[in-house]
Image 1 (cartoon, rainbow, N blue to C red):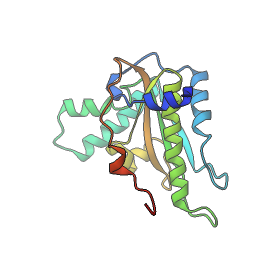
Image 2 (image 1 turned 120 degrees about the horizontal axis):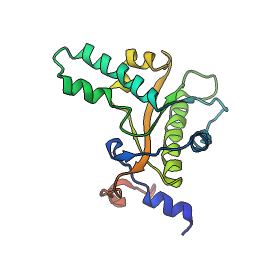
Image 3 (image 1 turned 120 degrees about the vertical axis):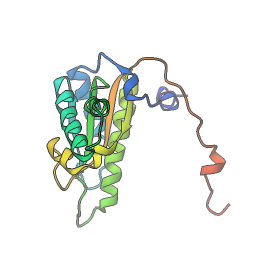
Image 4 (image 1 turned 90 degrees about the vertical axis):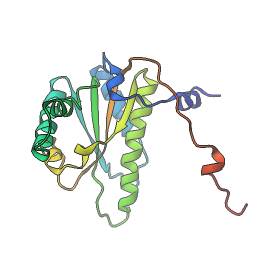
Length: 189
């Protein structure tokens, strides 16, 4: 079995709260983003982009999230607001994969959206290959236009996911996967 196959077989998501530092260096972040941009992209549209949250930027983004949460939940407790404030500071690095899919004369919008998803998955796999762990999640704020605007996401864009990257606090646990006979059919068979 090749190293790549072993890597894919052993990749696991790790909860952001279970990711520690140190996170990737600037050079490692550049490598991660270069890999994440090498995905199928019909028409060479680059229908995705990245927003990097590291250091104090994670806390600043957390303030945006906490403020929106508090505005939408007047009954929110201080503990709940503080939890929301720490959403992007749980892992040393968070990278938002932003989908820029839109109407195109030749490339269906669906294919552009799939390209953004492929970019997020490549980012997760690259992190694993570099010895880090990652978790690709969205959460409520990925759908809140006010939060997205404050984070620099344009009105015609959507967040495909926030990829949290760090070092696992403990070995990741595997989860049961569906048996192939439950998810695979053979046409004509």
